[in-house]
Amino acid sequence: MEVIFLGTGTSQGVPMIACDCAVCTSSDPRNRRTRASIHVVMDGLHVQVDAAPELRLQCVEQRVATIDCFILTHGHADHVTGMDDLRRFCDRKGGEALTVYSTEEGIARVLAIFPYAIAERPIAKGYAAFKLLSMPPCLDLPQGTIESTLLPHGGLNTLGLIFTERSSGKKFVYYTDNKRLPQEAMAKAKGAAVVVLDGLRPEPHPTHMSIPEAIVAAAEIGAPLTYLTHLTHHTDHAAFEVGLPSGVRLAYDGLRLVI
Image (tube, rainbow, N blue to C red; front, top):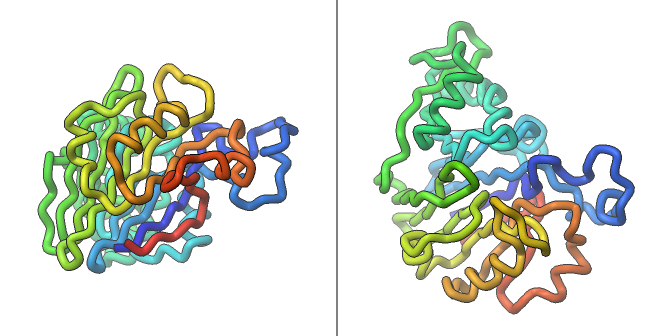
């Protein structure tokens, strides 16, 4: 299994508009964070999770050439507004609609923003087309399984995702945009080789886990390696990572893992 972190930043991105702080003006490329999304390759199946506003640039930078299916964790702007750029992957599928899995809330947001793209095929070459489906508790595919669990995020629930590759048996967990991890989510994450957790900033936040909260959750899950994502400009990569517990690290745009 391969995981590509296309983006690891918050809804404002880093550097932020009109900010001259040390992180926003840093020369460390790990402090340049586009909005959070990942690309998972599981036994040859390419799964894109979320579509940041920078999706086109992310895919070009990381040479993402194929998407077989798309999962939208929730309908907030920093995760959904790049979906129009999925049109290129519809072209590469021979003009077929791209299957999109999400929650009821996420599907409603896609319908509201992209009504022109809800079709079995694009209306013309070069347009996007989406086949919208509710994400099941377990998506059983020839290449493995993708389980889902609901995570509280303010007034809505996001999809937490658990990937298990069939050939290797390796498990990868992606939990972004949540304030806490319910017991079901904690249990599903047990035994994962790598876990990704929302770790917005050092200080508490009403709808996201803070870095200290994520560290506590990581210790309870007990994965060999945990990465924190959805990071703000309050976290300088090099300076902050040295103080993290063993096995906990900060993700960064362009990070590639082979699990």
